[in-house]
Image (cartoon, helix red, strand yellow):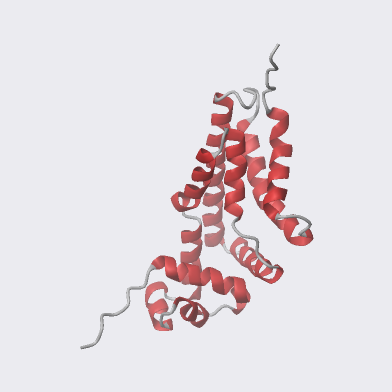
Length: 203
């Protein structure tokens, strides 16, 4: 009696897409590359996603799912001793592991593909707005807790923190002079330190 067909988990396929994009880049990527990495047939991917573009769109939707993306951020934020440190840890968590030069370049090529396609770009825009809203919540908690000054423009700070999240990773990829987490921490604290409420010294 034949065994039951293997259930293909979405997360397994998406992990395979991430691996394949990092290995060969989005242009050379084929459905066969992803199928091989996921341990499924190419036909199964075609049946589910229709085409390479459909698969990559599915990957972007999965990778930018708000709840899944911010869950690790919130865990890092809530475990920190104060909201400012929590924001720093949350942003560092989004960077994930450090990738090698070729893998980083392939992932950057994927971003170029996304920016040139209106449907991909719309998904990225929604993702950016969601992440900035999350960072805004952290900053509001820092003000409410007396860690940041009330006069701070929190919307502008959230946007700047998100820009650091993206820009520092790109600069790090070119220099690799110190660990990515250290560079992110340094740049975020440079942004936030001027807005900290001075600690009272005991008389």
